[in-house]
Length: 381
Image (tube, one colour):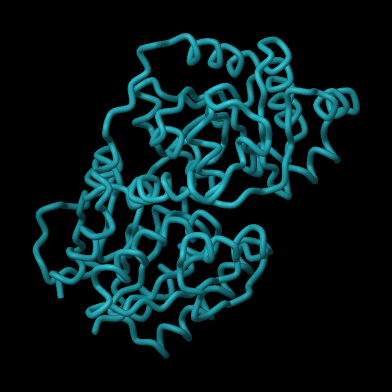
C-alpha cells in the first residue's frame, strides 16, 4: 500500500484535489492511501469546509490552522507543521496543487526531507514575478520529482527552463519526470456538471435566464485593495449592465465586500447598490458556481480558475488582469485581457458577444488526467 500526502490550503486546491481523491477511491483504493493535510491558509465553513461535503472528499487528517498573516510568517508556520507530518507519516509522495503559500511550504518541507514531490499544474507562468503566485510556482517546480503540466504551453515553459521529457525512472529531484496528461480541473468539470444540474437550482433561484446574464468574480489584492482599480472595474460593470440591460451576478469574496464599502466612491457605491441588473450575493458553493458558469452568457473575472472553467463550459471571458498563466484561451480568442481599464472591458464585452468565431478547442485533455497521473506515479515505483 502506497501512501500519498496531499497538501491543500485554499478553496481552489480543495476543488482540484477532488479528482485525485475520487480516482483513488474508485480505482486505486487497494493500492493507495491518501492522507490529507489542510494548512488552514483559508478555512471557514463557507469558504472551505462545505467543499469537502459537496465534492465528497474525505475530511482532512490534519489541519494546521495557520490562518492569514504576512507571507513569511504564514509560510514558515506551514513549513514547520508539514515537516512534522512528513516525519510522522513517511509518505511515498507529497502532492501539491497550484501556486499558493501552502504549495510553497509543502515544496520546501518535502524537499528538505527528500520526500518526492508531485506538482500538479506545473509549468504555469504569467511572467510577472511581482505576483506571489509566480514565485511560488517557479520554486515548487524546481524542487519537484514529478511534474504534471496541464497544457502544451505549460510544458513548453518547463522545457525552456531546462526540464526534459525523456528522463527515465527512477525519478528524483535531480532527474524529474515531466508528463503531459491533461488537467484535473477538466476532469472535475465533466464530472460535476451533471451533479450540479441535479443538486442546485441557483440560476432559477436568482431569477436569472440561462445564457442571458454575466457571471463576475473579483478577489485579487491588486484589484480589491487599490481604490482606482476597484472603482474602474465596478464602473465598467455598471456601464455594461445599464447600457445593454444585461443582468450580472457576482458572488462577493469577503475581501471584495469589505473593500467595496471602504474604497468605492459614494456615487458609484450607491449606483451599484441600486442597479436592478446587478446582484451582489454571498459566496456560493462549488456546485452553485458550476451551474452559474455553465449557464452564463459571459464571464468577467480575475481568477485563474474561473477563467479556465469558463473555457471548459464554452463561455467567453473578460480577464481583469494584465497577464494570465492560461495563455491558450487568450491566444485562441476565447478570452481577452483587459486589466482594470473600463474602455477595454466594454470593448471586450461588445467583441465577445458579437463574435461567432470564438473557438473552444480541446486543450486540457480527455477528462482522465487524475487516473493517468496515478498510473504514472505507481509505475515509477
